[in-house]
Length: 495
Image (tube, rainbow, N blue to C red; front, side):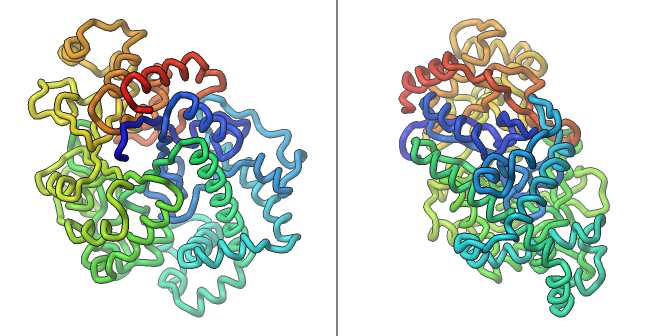
């Protein structure tokens, strides 16, 4: 990212689609066209690995793709589905995702597609995919099959020989659950095929993809089941401590995420192989990746597993300099964005500066308490940074104006832009300010390009209901909006 550029933040699930959830089908390609038409070089998405419920952060596999993003239209074109299989489909809401309803519908389609796949001869492409990805794919497919087989309960509750990955038990189960395992491998093959087709299309049209790597994985995941030695677990396999965030502006009691915490000493003894494989895997999918919760690579907030809030956790040193020294000998620093937000201490800032990593600035946080010492105020930006009007964890700009911004914050913003801005124009001036900043890259959530209110917010940290569901509707992205976006992008030298 050596040249000034801009992009849009919008998760794949937020695309329009006939099937209840944004997917890797026609609308993904149409959105890539929108980006190119609007002069945007980047499309940033949230994690696309297998989620825990609706949340894309901390899923059941750090490597497998989210098969809910598979396009039925693409499966139809390949001959795995017929129109009679697809239609009639349920009536889905157009402005949000009903994950339960979508899952029920798509699983029926996947069962049908897999039966047709089995009836034919596996392609060389499928065989190659299974061979190249064997290290993670076999574990993920087995884990997924066992979760379905036992119905409920974490892997810790499975019979001891499977819980502890006994060789004989695994060998026997592979035969017993061969069909379920085969289906998951087929779906993963289809996911990565559809994903790479979309990426190739985006790249050909001058659009690069920015992905997101969550720091943690879920306890009930193929990664923890397969690599217990890399996590701080008891001798019986239960978490001793779990992840979280200390109390901050988002939540007064902190955020108790509950993921198992890495044993960085064990990871270091293995030369960080699991992490490096994970990062390389993501860099095959994306042009640039954002390292979520970056400060956790330097020190993590660890909470005793039995606590109900994150208030009484403590900071514990984690990877530190050595990890990045080894990583950046293999991969250039400009392929990373680091989420250096939240409780940032000097040791975290030192790593960002030492390795010339690209950090984040959130414009919404720039207008409180004066400009001095506030890294999110535009006067303090540096070129090697990415400015966001807000992130997926923030309110929309219009929602922030209406519900969160105080009188002093509004006045500070008006003074900064040199005029008072009415509510209908506020989001446009906010976007203009981000694009005009010295930050080399500006990324704008689609909600702020469209000027949508709080109802379009993607996530509310510290809550569990109503998150990750927002979708934009057909017709909301108009030629006039794209024209105005391109003009602003050109004005501020980002094309």
